[in-house]
Image 1 (cartoon, rainbow, N blue to C red):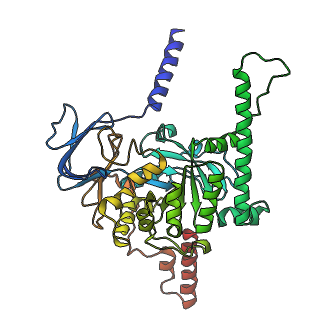
Image 2: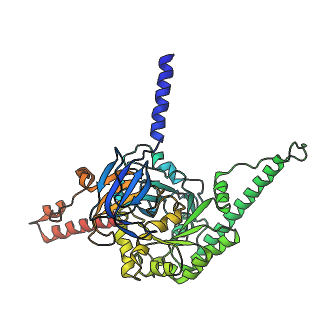
Image 3: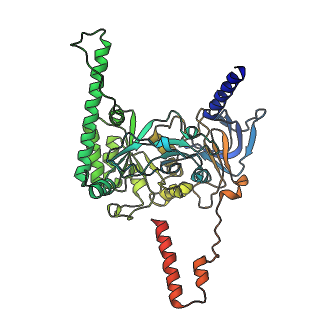
Length: 461
């Protein structure tokens, strides 16, 4: 019996250790600290205790047992935050219905996804993980920290981060459901009608629950006065959470007319919290976005990859920001997220934003959009120690990430980067199929190249 009890205690302890997120102590010395909110500090130290920033100043003493990191000649900045990412999941779209508010990305996290480590190699410490945009109203997203090396998917979640949900406008839900399955929405009008119907159903559901709770709080009731509880519906419960302001909408969008449409729908139902993703034509309606209080998470210079994205401008981020819209630059890609500091730098070329304005678009601004800016996004005493260290100013094309820290723990160190984490490509290496055709006929050369081009096409789509 004692052995059995001891075994149960052991299992409980292991479970507790797995659930607990480790934090660390560190002292970063003599770096140029880019705080984002409190200016740039030369030859400054950052002391981290128990995963949080304990002190920022010059000539800080190293507490006993705390590791020192020499950042002399380097730049220390807040960890980069990607407001639109698909890393850490393999489930793209639950495309069986145009409304799938009942599903949740957090149920499908993969802590072993190598893209998480590679994001760390680009200074990214936090990602907003979203599924695709097949559904007008999709499922709930998940804000994760890049705690590479932890085996429990639950430890990837940023505990306490506000709930978010994915919406989508335009071609994607129209094509998948209207054209593909013959159900609403087939048109942009149908997308709006679907939003209104879903919100109306959620409002009625919420009112039914409020009526039931009120009836219960009044003490004992006669049988005639008793109000039965409504049937629980997780889809409607999630949508009701949006109406209550408990869940933030992040909406895939491109065209200005549709952006205005969804803001009108939100006004009619009292929804105030929305971040438009991509928002390529946001520059056309920047004052309206600012007046509503909507935020925007954009590409730096992507457009024309499908018809509804035919028209945009690399000045989009700057125009939005100058109109008072909280704007971030995202990746929507496990490859591009390693270069978000380069993407932010483009705003110095297009619109001449200041260095701090540009860096805010990949740090503080996405934190605001995700509701986590009290915890991360800038280097301030008391905030969580998610930090990236660069060899040069992070907006420089010559900058190379040296170290990435999450919760005070070094999760990436360029000097200790394992060789098997990388795939080195030799640009001089011949493609095997092409190599085999050398010396063959013209037809064999052409057939080989057709095969190579076909493979490249498949990889790109």
